[in-house]
Image (tube, rainbow, N blue to C red; front, top):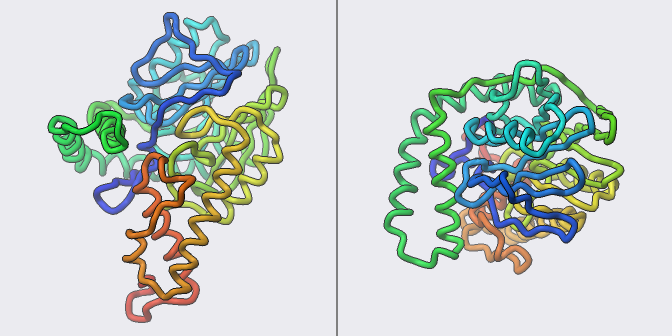
Length: 359
């Protein structure tokens, strides 16, 4: 995200998400000569690749590389510009067409900070709202990180240093996700240059190359105030940004849950066979159904709390439903419940003396 959400300061970033890459049968990990400590390069189709964030790496989000035959498109650009510098090198090593466009799915920092590494003649594309948010929120986020990121890095460094439990546990996985996240912030603090998209689209935009065609679709407000996806209709491959998460709890703190659910229905109508989520392993259309069920289950749980007149403080004792109990970032589950609780109560229950804040 461009506006940084800090786990231990009361706000969150969905940017800190990662998991092991579980690949569909049609995908293969590209190995020879293109290894990265930050992401797995996964071949999805001829000229189509996904960069899947590795646990312990500094990519943070997933990205896409699509060669249309005479030009290449990059979808999202990681949190760290130092990691994004690997992308043009990969494109050259793989013998792909020159990079012409970079797409920002939404404004959150982990999807846009690599913009600055691409040549000036490479156009950055986003929705109009996303471009506005990058321009307004990124400078604030970068300034804030200079204050808190070093302390957060020191904290997670200490956790990693003294950890003596199971290194395959979710607890240790969490450390391996947060520590490089803050490390990437600290080590790039003095080199960040906010590059704002210079080509705006809303609705749909088709980009046609000599061999392939992609469709950019503005989905409106879902996960963020403005989300966009990239779809290859013939190959049925969808780069979904943070509208789809796989095997991990999504971050709902800035979302419109109802709008997000409607977007998921619209994504399902595209009938994608391969989905690259913003965070997590390569997935399929089943992950759209799973996301829909997650929204239903969390909302139902909160509605039951409200029906029983239980205070929001008791949400922290809620039991994660079985389908999601093994998902990464269960802290987001509880923040999502609080978000839903306040959202559902807000129209009917406000403290007149609190300036409209929900109690």
